[in-house]
Image (cartoon, rainbow, N blue to C red; front, side, top):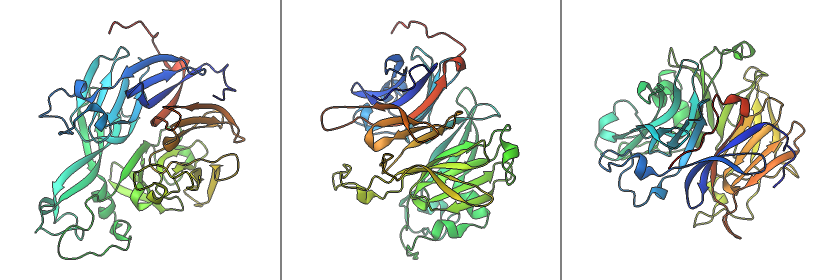
Length: 380
């Protein structure tokens, strides 16, 4: 482990596969565990009849993706496409949301949380809403990503369709510009888009973004190489750009008026037929920034010697107050922190055995001063 930040008074939340289970753990700089939460889907959703994901054979058939800690030490997180839950610092379940939430979970200045959900339809049910993807003659499944606004108790306050917002903003071309044939039979694409992150522009940064207002949302859609900024009040797209990022994740508003993006920069051809990462695949994942006004793009880490990364899917980053970056490299089971000069100052590799690593889906840095409570002993 690289650890040139041992004197920092902070801790890092890791989400992923540890000790043979889905787990969240808050670790110190030396890797020691301050607190861990065992995340068993069957325990948090005990009634198989009402689970957002049914038919699972074991709890490991879903994993965790999207998480945050509250100042009280509560953990709020999503089981990927299978629900959002909140646990106290002793792993007691506070609530569980029966929604197909996924990928992203952030706090909102309006209170509560923002996450992405998914509605399942048959093509016949929504044929009049989303032409030309399908016709009413088929009952094939359709997946529609939505933004969910939750209150502190996990109740859905607001639900907004991302495809509806894009099409109502006159941008249907963004959804159909992928060289697919649109015919009068069958379903062209069951997954209308693959949203994988939402972030809210906070009021203290709003004056740095002349095109946007406080409370606007930035949303990433992986399969379309598309990032948009929208106004949730009017449900209109204010800004959008396709590429140069490829199958990107995790856009963030930055204090300098730019948007940073985790650019996976890889296609699924970087996997073998058995979905293992090809060792000869280019390690070309990077972190990019874009100025929404000038549209100037810059690679701030990655894609050069000494900064090699590869995350074919998933991945996350956090621009830190000191100009450094905390990066979650999913395929490598690795979290690294780099300083403003691009030097690695901290690294955590989730080694499983001599051949494999365990996945890490999310990492987030918390100053110890963020927490309003001590980490008490828990009786399990």
